[in-house]
Length: 168
Image (tube, rainbow, N blue to C red; front, side, top):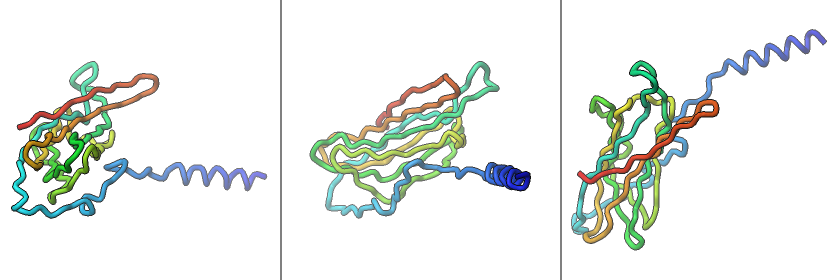
């Protein structure tokens, strides 16, 4: 009986020491599979949008922060035409480029939404992180909508808020 108990305890210690897998995107999208080729003859209207996000916020003092999970929604608000997202750049508080999510154009069907998730553990962006999106659409169509939801929970307390993109 002692041997079984010792083996059980050893197994518990061994398996509890395993590091959990860190993810950078809850539902990763294979951006290359979404890539499309645009023709110059398409005569598309191009633009840029800015979106502020917060991967952490200050709490009580400037020396204490709370990490947040960020959900960035990239939305096609047109009911009839697809739009094209050309680039999604993520910058930190200092304005340094952290990562580019895609460099090739991707399309969004009418009313389609895709997300970019910044994990709670990913604090590279800091308290002043931001995105710049390059996009293209047919003339006279609705421009894309970019929104972010930031959330964190600890015990019985939760924090959540949203931001909305602006056209540059």
